[in-house]
Image (cartoon, rainbow, N blue to C red; front, side, top):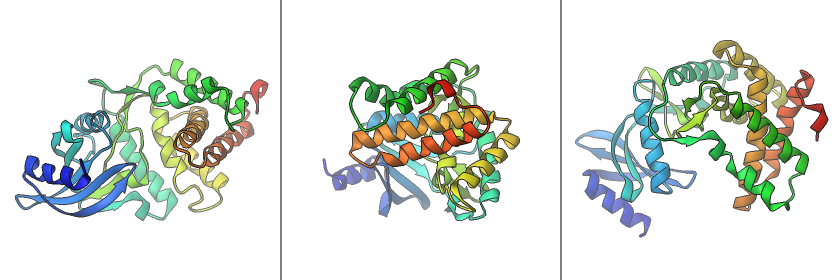
Length: 281
């Protein structure tokens, strides 16, 4: 079925008028739409499983700063969303310290949400690293993959109270809606809350200074405001860098950026004496 046909079926199913494409996000197609004089967003996802998880996560975050779900059709991998107005993303705040403070306020609201229902577990989210390791071939240096798995296993085992996480909480997924900041596009992952700051740390890495300086400043603000452990944040960052490299290899894209990310977090750990010297790459 072509995208035009899917959109037509969505118009009929939801009783909406699709106006124009809005964006193309990680394989999803997003359109501006209206229904009964209400401005809406139609999102057509990659598959039913991912869209269903997103709907469930938005429902669970609904009282804690998430955009509203108006309707959903799994067979079309489509969901109808409230439109954020004016909809400016957090990336529009170019003062990095101010943006980080806003991120903290959004993070705190989400973390008050208990886990309910079925969601993806964080170890499953990281499964690409295991797939890569089992192939025994590829450009990633084995010590980095081993380090990521070591950190991941330790972090998962030591997570006392898994939380429902956004899973992709960064500047573009935090929008201004009326007098507050709201989240969109959650992955709905259950795991360590420390992981939910990582994608924010990876975006605009040199905004307001050199990447190393910005990383140190952001981690300092996040750990102070949110009561997080800096060492856990950095270890999740290293594991996420290797995960991104593995995903890139599966997609046939450049894996080096993921390795650069892992190296940047490893340097942070080494400067503070938290690196595992016995297995240092």
